[in-house]
Length: 504
Image 1 (tube, helix red, strand yellow):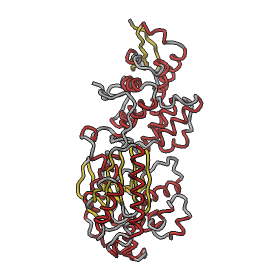
Image 2: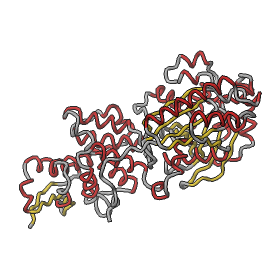
Image 3: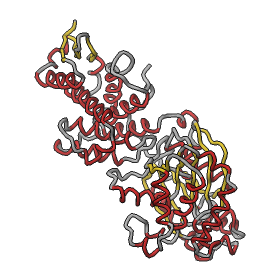
Image 4: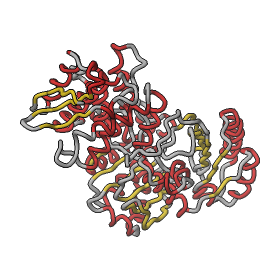
Protein backbone atom coordinates (compact mmCIF):
# COMPACT_ATOMS: atom_id res chain seq x y z
CA UNK A 1 0.00 0.00 0.00
CA UNK A 2 1.39 3.43 -0.97
CA UNK A 3 2.24 5.81 1.87
CA UNK A 4 0.01 8.45 0.25
CA UNK A 5 -3.12 6.32 -0.06
CA UNK A 6 -6.17 8.45 0.74
CA UNK A 7 -4.60 11.78 -0.24
CA UNK A 8 -7.18 14.13 -1.71
CA UNK A 9 -6.03 15.76 -4.94
CA UNK A 10 -8.41 18.72 -5.20
CA UNK A 11 -6.96 22.10 -4.14
CA UNK A 12 -7.19 22.67 -0.36
CA UNK A 13 -10.09 24.81 0.73
CA UNK A 14 -9.66 27.93 2.80
CA UNK A 15 -11.49 27.64 6.10
CA UNK A 16 -9.97 30.57 8.00
CA UNK A 17 -9.54 30.23 11.74
CA UNK A 18 -8.43 33.13 13.95
CA UNK A 19 -6.34 33.21 17.11
CA UNK A 20 -6.19 36.30 19.34
CA UNK A 21 -3.30 36.39 21.80
CA UNK A 22 -3.54 39.02 24.58
CA UNK A 23 -0.02 39.14 25.95
CA UNK A 24 1.81 41.28 28.45
CA UNK A 25 3.43 43.37 25.73
CA UNK A 26 1.30 42.97 22.60
CA UNK A 27 -2.20 42.04 21.50
CA UNK A 28 -2.11 40.05 18.28
CA UNK A 29 -4.50 38.61 15.71
CA UNK A 30 -3.34 35.80 13.44
CA UNK A 31 -5.75 34.30 10.91
CA UNK A 32 -4.65 30.94 9.50
CA UNK A 33 -5.86 29.24 6.32
CA UNK A 34 -7.49 26.47 8.28
CA UNK A 35 -7.29 24.07 11.19
CA UNK A 36 -4.69 21.87 9.51
CA UNK A 37 -1.45 20.09 10.41
CA UNK A 38 0.68 22.90 9.04
CA UNK A 39 -1.47 26.06 9.00
CA UNK A 40 -0.26 29.09 7.06
CA UNK A 41 -0.98 32.59 8.35
CA UNK A 42 -2.99 34.65 5.87
CA UNK A 43 -3.19 37.72 8.12
CA UNK A 44 -1.05 38.78 11.07
CA UNK A 45 -1.28 42.02 13.04
CA UNK A 46 -0.12 43.07 16.48
CA UNK A 47 -0.62 46.18 18.57
CA UNK A 48 1.89 46.95 21.30
CA UNK A 49 -0.30 47.78 24.29
CA UNK A 50 2.14 47.16 27.17
CA UNK A 51 -0.54 45.61 29.39
CA UNK A 52 2.17 44.17 31.62
CA UNK A 53 3.85 47.49 32.40
CA UNK A 54 3.60 48.16 36.11
CA UNK A 55 1.73 44.95 36.97
CA UNK A 56 4.67 43.64 39.01
CA UNK A 57 4.93 46.79 41.11
CA UNK A 58 1.43 48.26 41.07
CA UNK A 59 -0.66 45.12 40.66
CA UNK A 60 -2.90 46.59 37.96
CA UNK A 61 -3.13 46.76 34.20
CA UNK A 62 -2.39 50.33 33.04
CA UNK A 63 -5.36 52.41 31.83
CA UNK A 64 -3.66 53.45 28.61
CA UNK A 65 -2.74 49.87 27.79
CA UNK A 66 -6.31 48.67 28.35
CA UNK A 67 -7.74 51.44 26.14
CA UNK A 68 -5.37 50.48 23.32
CA UNK A 69 -6.10 46.78 23.78
CA UNK A 70 -9.89 47.25 23.67
CA UNK A 71 -9.57 49.33 20.49
CA UNK A 72 -7.38 46.63 18.95
CA UNK A 73 -9.83 43.88 19.85
CA UNK A 74 -12.70 45.76 18.21
CA UNK A 75 -10.62 46.06 15.06
CA UNK A 76 -9.67 42.38 15.23
CA UNK A 77 -13.34 41.43 15.49
CA UNK A 78 -14.10 43.34 12.30
CA UNK A 79 -11.07 41.90 10.50
CA UNK A 80 -11.89 38.30 11.45
CA UNK A 81 -15.42 38.80 10.16
CA UNK A 82 -14.12 40.35 6.92
CA UNK A 83 -11.72 37.44 6.32
CA UNK A 84 -14.46 34.91 7.02
CA UNK A 85 -13.06 33.26 10.14
CA UNK A 86 -15.97 31.45 11.72
CA UNK A 87 -13.96 30.45 14.78
CA UNK A 88 -12.00 32.89 16.92
CA UNK A 89 -9.86 31.32 19.64
CA UNK A 90 -8.73 33.95 22.14
CA UNK A 91 -6.30 33.57 25.04
CA UNK A 92 -4.74 35.94 27.57
CA UNK A 93 -1.50 35.33 29.42
CA UNK A 94 0.55 36.60 32.37
CA UNK A 95 -0.58 40.24 32.67
CA UNK A 96 -4.30 39.47 32.63
CA UNK A 97 -4.06 36.53 35.01
CA UNK A 98 -1.92 38.35 37.59
CA UNK A 99 -3.38 41.87 37.67
CA UNK A 100 -5.97 42.77 40.31
CA UNK A 101 -8.16 44.30 37.60
CA UNK A 102 -7.53 41.46 35.15
CA UNK A 103 -11.02 39.97 35.43
CA UNK A 104 -12.70 43.32 34.77
CA UNK A 105 -10.49 43.89 31.75
CA UNK A 106 -11.26 40.44 30.33
CA UNK A 107 -15.00 41.12 30.63
CA UNK A 108 -14.59 44.32 28.59
CA UNK A 109 -12.28 42.55 26.16
CA UNK A 110 -14.78 39.75 25.50
CA UNK A 111 -17.45 42.29 24.71
CA UNK A 112 -15.12 44.13 22.31
CA UNK A 113 -13.96 40.95 20.57
CA UNK A 114 -17.34 39.25 20.55
CA UNK A 115 -15.74 35.97 21.65
CA UNK A 116 -14.85 34.21 24.87
CA UNK A 117 -11.29 34.73 26.11
CA UNK A 118 -9.50 32.02 28.06
CA UNK A 119 -7.05 33.30 30.67
CA UNK A 120 -4.26 30.72 30.63
CA UNK A 121 -2.59 29.52 33.78
CA UNK A 122 1.19 29.40 33.75
CA UNK A 123 1.10 25.64 33.19
CA UNK A 124 -1.38 25.98 30.32
CA UNK A 125 0.75 28.67 28.69
CA UNK A 126 3.83 26.45 28.98
CA UNK A 127 1.91 23.50 27.57
CA UNK A 128 0.64 25.37 24.51
CA UNK A 129 4.06 26.84 23.83
CA UNK A 130 5.63 23.38 23.97
CA UNK A 131 2.90 21.92 21.75
CA UNK A 132 3.73 24.67 19.28
CA UNK A 133 7.37 23.60 19.30
CA UNK A 134 6.37 19.96 18.77
CA UNK A 135 4.05 20.98 15.91
CA UNK A 136 6.84 22.89 14.18
CA UNK A 137 9.82 20.70 15.15
CA UNK A 138 8.41 17.16 15.53
CA UNK A 139 11.76 15.68 16.56
CA UNK A 140 12.41 18.26 19.28
CA UNK A 141 14.50 16.95 22.18
CA UNK A 142 15.32 19.53 24.83
CA UNK A 143 13.67 22.33 26.78
CA UNK A 144 11.33 24.87 25.19
CA UNK A 145 11.38 28.40 26.55
CA UNK A 146 8.64 30.90 25.71
CA UNK A 147 9.58 34.43 26.70
CA UNK A 148 6.62 36.79 26.94
CA UNK A 149 6.46 40.29 28.34
CA UNK A 150 5.59 39.10 31.84
CA UNK A 151 6.85 35.56 32.21
CA UNK A 152 9.11 32.79 30.96
CA UNK A 153 7.64 29.34 30.49
CA UNK A 154 10.03 26.39 30.42
CA UNK A 155 9.00 22.83 29.60
CA UNK A 156 10.91 19.64 28.85
CA UNK A 157 10.16 17.89 25.53
CA UNK A 158 11.20 14.42 24.37
CA UNK A 159 9.79 11.93 21.84
CA UNK A 160 6.89 14.25 21.05
CA UNK A 161 5.77 14.30 24.68
CA UNK A 162 5.64 17.06 27.27
CA UNK A 163 7.31 16.45 30.59
CA UNK A 164 8.31 18.76 33.45
CA UNK A 165 7.42 22.45 33.10
CA UNK A 166 7.51 25.66 35.14
CA UNK A 167 6.63 29.35 34.84
CA UNK A 168 9.09 32.00 36.01
CA UNK A 169 8.35 35.73 36.49
CA UNK A 170 11.14 36.81 34.13
CA UNK A 171 9.44 38.60 31.25
CA UNK A 172 11.25 41.77 30.07
CA UNK A 173 8.45 44.13 31.14
CA UNK A 174 8.37 42.60 34.61
CA UNK A 175 12.14 42.76 34.90
CA UNK A 176 12.13 46.42 33.87
CA UNK A 177 9.61 47.17 36.61
CA UNK A 178 11.25 45.16 39.36
CA UNK A 179 14.77 46.33 38.56
CA UNK A 180 13.74 49.94 37.92
CA UNK A 181 15.52 49.68 34.59
CA UNK A 182 18.83 48.44 36.02
CA UNK A 183 20.46 45.60 34.08
CA UNK A 184 22.64 44.73 37.08
CA UNK A 185 19.65 44.40 39.38
CA UNK A 186 17.76 42.44 36.72
CA UNK A 187 20.69 40.02 36.54
CA UNK A 188 20.38 39.35 40.28
CA UNK A 189 16.64 38.67 39.93
CA UNK A 190 17.22 36.30 37.02
CA UNK A 191 20.06 34.43 38.71
CA UNK A 192 18.00 33.92 41.86
CA UNK A 193 15.11 32.46 39.83
CA UNK A 194 17.34 30.23 37.71
CA UNK A 195 19.21 29.02 40.76
CA UNK A 196 15.99 27.38 41.94
CA UNK A 197 14.89 26.08 38.50
CA UNK A 198 15.82 22.42 38.50
CA UNK A 199 14.48 22.02 34.97
CA UNK A 200 17.62 23.73 33.65
CA UNK A 201 19.64 20.66 34.61
CA UNK A 202 17.70 18.75 31.94
CA UNK A 203 19.22 20.95 29.23
CA UNK A 204 22.71 19.51 29.56
CA UNK A 205 23.91 18.45 26.10
CA UNK A 206 20.50 19.02 24.51
CA UNK A 207 18.79 21.86 22.59
CA UNK A 208 17.11 24.95 23.95
CA UNK A 209 14.09 25.86 21.78
CA UNK A 210 13.61 29.61 21.95
CA UNK A 211 10.10 30.99 21.45
CA UNK A 212 9.13 34.66 21.44
CA UNK A 213 9.68 37.85 19.49
CA UNK A 214 12.65 39.06 21.53
CA UNK A 215 14.65 35.92 20.83
CA UNK A 216 13.61 35.90 17.17
CA UNK A 217 15.10 39.39 16.88
CA UNK A 218 18.33 38.11 18.40
CA UNK A 219 18.44 35.38 15.75
CA UNK A 220 17.86 37.94 12.98
CA UNK A 221 20.80 39.92 14.31
CA UNK A 222 23.01 36.83 14.35
CA UNK A 223 21.99 35.99 10.78
CA UNK A 224 23.04 39.46 9.65
CA UNK A 225 26.38 39.24 11.50
CA UNK A 226 27.23 35.87 9.94
CA UNK A 227 25.93 36.78 6.44
CA UNK A 228 23.65 33.76 6.57
CA UNK A 229 22.12 33.18 3.11
CA UNK A 230 18.73 31.83 4.22
CA UNK A 231 16.52 34.39 5.96
CA UNK A 232 14.18 31.88 7.59
CA UNK A 233 14.00 32.02 11.39
CA UNK A 234 12.28 28.71 12.03
CA UNK A 235 14.87 26.07 12.99
CA UNK A 236 17.72 28.60 12.85
CA UNK A 237 20.44 27.27 15.16
CA UNK A 238 23.18 28.95 17.12
CA UNK A 239 25.79 27.19 19.20
CA UNK A 240 25.69 27.85 22.92
CA UNK A 241 28.76 30.04 22.66
CA UNK A 242 27.37 32.04 19.73
CA UNK A 243 24.09 32.66 21.55
CA UNK A 244 25.86 33.59 24.80
CA UNK A 245 28.19 36.02 23.08
CA UNK A 246 25.39 37.75 21.17
CA UNK A 247 22.92 37.92 24.05
CA UNK A 248 25.61 39.19 26.41
CA UNK A 249 26.46 41.96 23.97
CA UNK A 250 22.83 43.02 23.37
CA UNK A 251 22.07 42.98 27.10
CA UNK A 252 24.47 45.89 27.54
CA UNK A 253 23.30 47.99 24.62
CA UNK A 254 21.08 51.00 25.20
CA UNK A 255 17.71 51.43 23.46
CA UNK A 256 19.27 54.32 21.51
CA UNK A 257 22.01 52.02 20.20
CA UNK A 258 19.55 49.25 19.35
CA UNK A 259 17.34 51.71 17.50
CA UNK A 260 20.15 52.05 14.95
CA UNK A 261 20.31 48.29 14.32
CA UNK A 262 18.20 47.50 11.25
CA UNK A 263 17.55 43.89 12.22
CA UNK A 264 15.99 44.80 15.58
CA UNK A 265 12.32 45.79 15.61
CA UNK A 266 11.98 49.41 16.73
CA UNK A 267 9.14 48.37 19.02
CA UNK A 268 11.49 46.12 21.03
CA UNK A 269 14.47 48.38 21.65
CA UNK A 270 13.56 49.02 25.29
CA UNK A 271 12.76 45.38 26.19
CA UNK A 272 15.43 43.72 24.04
CA UNK A 273 18.36 44.11 26.50
CA UNK A 274 16.34 42.46 29.28
CA UNK A 275 15.18 39.60 27.03
CA UNK A 276 18.76 39.09 25.86
CA UNK A 277 19.92 39.05 29.47
CA UNK A 278 17.44 36.27 30.29
CA UNK A 279 18.94 34.13 27.51
CA UNK A 280 22.53 34.91 28.48
CA UNK A 281 21.92 33.98 32.12
CA UNK A 282 19.99 30.84 31.17
CA UNK A 283 22.93 29.66 29.07
CA UNK A 284 25.29 30.52 31.91
CA UNK A 285 23.33 28.33 34.32
CA UNK A 286 23.26 25.33 31.99
CA UNK A 287 25.12 23.86 29.01
CA UNK A 288 22.87 23.01 26.04
CA UNK A 289 24.49 22.09 22.74
CA UNK A 290 22.57 24.72 20.80
CA UNK A 291 19.79 27.29 20.75
CA UNK A 292 17.17 26.72 18.06
CA UNK A 293 14.47 29.20 17.11
CA UNK A 294 10.85 28.09 16.87
CA UNK A 295 8.42 30.47 15.18
CA UNK A 296 5.62 28.23 16.43
CA UNK A 297 4.49 28.97 19.97
CA UNK A 298 1.33 29.36 22.02
CA UNK A 299 -0.96 30.23 19.11
CA UNK A 300 0.12 27.32 16.94
CA UNK A 301 0.16 25.01 19.95
CA UNK A 302 -3.44 25.96 20.68
CA UNK A 303 -4.51 25.01 17.15
CA UNK A 304 -2.41 21.85 17.22
CA UNK A 305 -4.19 20.75 20.40
CA UNK A 306 -7.54 20.98 18.58
CA UNK A 307 -6.53 18.63 15.75
CA UNK A 308 -7.81 15.07 15.79
CA UNK A 309 -5.09 12.54 16.76
CA UNK A 310 -4.70 11.29 13.18
CA UNK A 311 -3.85 14.75 11.88
CA UNK A 312 -1.64 15.53 14.85
CA UNK A 313 0.61 12.57 14.03
CA UNK A 314 0.75 13.26 10.29
CA UNK A 315 3.99 14.60 8.78
CA UNK A 316 4.03 18.41 8.88
CA UNK A 317 6.49 18.74 5.99
CA UNK A 318 4.77 16.32 3.64
CA UNK A 319 1.40 17.89 4.48
CA UNK A 320 2.74 21.31 3.47
CA UNK A 321 4.38 20.00 0.29
CA UNK A 322 1.19 18.21 -0.67
CA UNK A 323 -0.75 21.46 -0.26
CA UNK A 324 1.80 23.12 -2.56
CA UNK A 325 1.36 20.37 -5.16
CA UNK A 326 -2.41 20.68 -5.04
CA UNK A 327 -2.20 24.44 -5.54
CA UNK A 328 0.64 24.79 -8.05
CA UNK A 329 1.44 21.53 -9.90
CA UNK A 330 -0.07 20.71 -13.27
CA UNK A 331 -1.18 17.37 -11.89
CA UNK A 332 -0.96 16.50 -8.19
CA UNK A 333 -1.63 12.86 -9.12
CA UNK A 334 1.53 12.90 -11.22
CA UNK A 335 3.59 14.05 -8.22
CA UNK A 336 2.34 11.08 -6.21
CA UNK A 337 3.25 8.78 -9.09
CA UNK A 338 6.69 10.37 -9.13
CA UNK A 339 7.14 9.40 -5.46
CA UNK A 340 6.34 5.77 -6.32
CA UNK A 341 8.41 5.82 -9.52
CA UNK A 342 11.55 6.96 -7.74
CA UNK A 343 11.07 4.14 -5.21
CA UNK A 344 12.46 1.85 -7.95
CA UNK A 345 15.93 3.35 -7.51
CA UNK A 346 16.23 3.89 -3.76
CA UNK A 347 16.14 1.59 -0.76
CA UNK A 348 17.39 -1.89 0.20
CA UNK A 349 19.56 -3.51 -2.52
CA UNK A 350 19.28 -0.28 -4.53
CA UNK A 351 20.76 3.19 -4.00
CA UNK A 352 21.41 3.74 -0.29
CA UNK A 353 18.80 5.81 1.51
CA UNK A 354 17.88 6.27 5.16
CA UNK A 355 14.44 7.23 6.47
CA UNK A 356 15.21 10.97 6.64
CA UNK A 357 16.47 10.94 3.04
CA UNK A 358 13.40 9.06 1.86
CA UNK A 359 11.15 11.65 3.48
CA UNK A 360 13.01 14.47 1.73
CA UNK A 361 12.82 12.60 -1.59
CA UNK A 362 9.05 12.38 -1.30
CA UNK A 363 8.85 16.06 -0.38
CA UNK A 364 10.97 16.96 -3.43
CA UNK A 365 8.71 14.86 -5.67
CA UNK A 366 5.66 16.75 -4.43
CA UNK A 367 7.36 20.09 -5.15
CA UNK A 368 8.97 19.14 -8.44
CA UNK A 369 6.47 20.89 -10.74
CA UNK A 370 5.50 24.02 -8.80
CA UNK A 371 7.41 26.42 -11.09
CA UNK A 372 5.79 25.44 -14.40
CA UNK A 373 3.66 28.59 -14.79
CA UNK A 374 6.69 30.88 -14.81
CA UNK A 375 8.59 31.85 -17.97
CA UNK A 376 11.01 28.99 -18.79
CA UNK A 377 14.01 31.23 -18.10
CA UNK A 378 12.79 31.89 -14.54
CA UNK A 379 11.34 28.56 -13.46
CA UNK A 380 14.49 27.50 -11.64
CA UNK A 381 14.86 30.77 -9.71
CA UNK A 382 11.15 30.95 -8.93
CA UNK A 383 11.11 27.43 -7.53
CA UNK A 384 14.27 28.09 -5.54
CA UNK A 385 12.80 31.16 -3.85
CA UNK A 386 9.35 29.59 -3.30
CA UNK A 387 10.75 26.53 -1.56
CA UNK A 388 13.58 28.15 0.38
CA UNK A 389 11.28 30.90 1.67
CA UNK A 390 8.10 28.86 2.18
CA UNK A 391 6.47 28.71 5.61
CA UNK A 392 7.37 25.03 5.92
CA UNK A 393 7.86 23.44 9.32
CA UNK A 394 9.10 20.02 10.29
CA UNK A 395 12.35 20.57 8.38
CA UNK A 396 15.75 21.96 9.29
CA UNK A 397 17.71 24.42 7.16
CA UNK A 398 19.91 21.87 5.34
CA UNK A 399 16.77 19.88 4.48
CA UNK A 400 15.02 23.00 3.20
CA UNK A 401 18.02 23.86 1.03
CA UNK A 402 18.14 20.28 -0.29
CA UNK A 403 14.53 20.57 -1.49
CA UNK A 404 15.07 24.01 -3.00
CA UNK A 405 18.21 23.01 -4.88
CA UNK A 406 16.75 19.70 -6.10
CA UNK A 407 13.87 21.49 -7.80
CA UNK A 408 16.19 24.30 -8.95
CA UNK A 409 18.39 21.74 -10.73
CA UNK A 410 15.32 19.97 -12.11
CA UNK A 411 14.59 23.15 -14.12
CA UNK A 412 18.21 24.17 -14.70
CA UNK A 413 20.33 21.07 -15.05
CA UNK A 414 23.58 23.03 -15.31
CA UNK A 415 22.84 25.54 -12.55
CA UNK A 416 25.46 25.81 -9.83
CA UNK A 417 24.82 29.08 -7.99
CA UNK A 418 21.66 28.33 -6.05
CA UNK A 419 21.52 31.88 -4.70
CA UNK A 420 24.38 31.20 -2.30
CA UNK A 421 22.48 28.43 -0.50
CA UNK A 422 24.98 25.77 -1.58
CA UNK A 423 27.19 26.43 1.43
CA UNK A 424 24.48 25.20 3.80
CA UNK A 425 24.57 21.73 2.21
CA UNK A 426 27.25 19.06 2.54
CA UNK A 427 28.87 17.50 -0.53
CA UNK A 428 26.99 14.21 -0.21
CA UNK A 429 23.57 15.88 0.03
CA UNK A 430 24.50 18.22 -2.79
CA UNK A 431 25.31 15.27 -5.05
CA UNK A 432 22.07 13.61 -4.03
CA UNK A 433 20.11 16.76 -4.98
CA UNK A 434 21.75 16.68 -8.43
CA UNK A 435 21.01 12.99 -8.83
CA UNK A 436 17.36 13.27 -7.83
CA UNK A 437 16.87 16.27 -10.11
CA UNK A 438 18.20 14.18 -13.03
CA UNK A 439 15.62 11.50 -12.21
CA UNK A 440 12.94 14.20 -12.33
CA UNK A 441 14.21 15.53 -15.66
CA UNK A 442 13.88 12.08 -17.16
CA UNK A 443 10.45 11.50 -15.67
CA UNK A 444 9.03 14.77 -17.03
CA UNK A 445 10.04 14.22 -20.65
CA UNK A 446 8.49 10.74 -20.47
CA UNK A 447 5.21 11.80 -18.87
CA UNK A 448 4.74 15.47 -19.87
CA UNK A 449 3.78 15.98 -16.19
CA UNK A 450 0.53 14.10 -16.71
CA UNK A 451 -0.67 11.14 -14.62
CA UNK A 452 -1.06 7.57 -15.81
CA UNK A 453 2.25 7.22 -17.67
CA UNK A 454 4.96 6.63 -15.06
CA UNK A 455 3.30 3.53 -13.51
CA UNK A 456 3.71 1.82 -16.92
CA UNK A 457 7.44 2.56 -17.16
CA UNK A 458 10.20 0.81 -15.23
CA UNK A 459 13.47 2.40 -14.17
CA UNK A 460 15.82 0.05 -12.38
CA UNK A 461 19.42 -0.77 -11.67
CA UNK A 462 20.62 -3.56 -13.96
CA UNK A 463 23.55 -5.93 -13.92
CA UNK A 464 26.98 -4.91 -15.18
CA UNK A 465 26.62 -1.33 -14.02
CA UNK A 466 23.63 -0.52 -16.20
CA UNK A 467 20.58 1.66 -15.61
CA UNK A 468 17.60 0.23 -17.46
CA UNK A 469 14.60 2.18 -18.70
CA UNK A 470 11.95 -0.36 -19.71
CA UNK A 471 9.06 0.78 -21.92
CA UNK A 472 6.08 -1.37 -22.93
CA UNK A 473 5.88 -1.84 -26.70
CA UNK A 474 2.80 0.35 -27.00
CA UNK A 475 4.84 3.23 -25.54
CA UNK A 476 7.95 2.59 -27.64
CA UNK A 477 7.42 5.84 -29.56
CA UNK A 478 8.20 7.76 -26.37
CA UNK A 479 11.83 6.79 -26.74
CA UNK A 480 14.05 9.13 -28.70
CA UNK A 481 17.17 11.27 -28.62
CA UNK A 482 16.09 13.41 -25.66
CA UNK A 483 15.09 10.42 -23.56
CA UNK A 484 18.33 8.60 -24.36
CA UNK A 485 20.35 11.71 -23.56
CA UNK A 486 18.62 12.23 -20.21
CA UNK A 487 18.95 8.55 -19.35
CA UNK A 488 22.66 8.56 -20.22
CA UNK A 489 23.23 11.67 -18.12
CA UNK A 490 21.45 10.14 -15.13
CA UNK A 491 23.30 6.84 -15.51
CA UNK A 492 26.66 8.64 -15.68
CA UNK A 493 25.96 10.31 -12.31
CA UNK A 494 25.57 6.80 -10.87
CA UNK A 495 28.70 5.48 -12.60
CA UNK A 496 26.53 3.37 -14.88
CA UNK A 497 25.52 3.04 -18.54
CA UNK A 498 21.98 3.79 -19.64
CA UNK A 499 19.99 1.21 -21.61
CA UNK A 500 16.49 1.42 -23.11
CA UNK A 501 14.51 -1.83 -23.33
CA UNK A 502 11.21 -2.31 -25.16
CA UNK A 503 9.13 -5.13 -23.69
CA UNK A 504 6.08 -7.06 -24.82
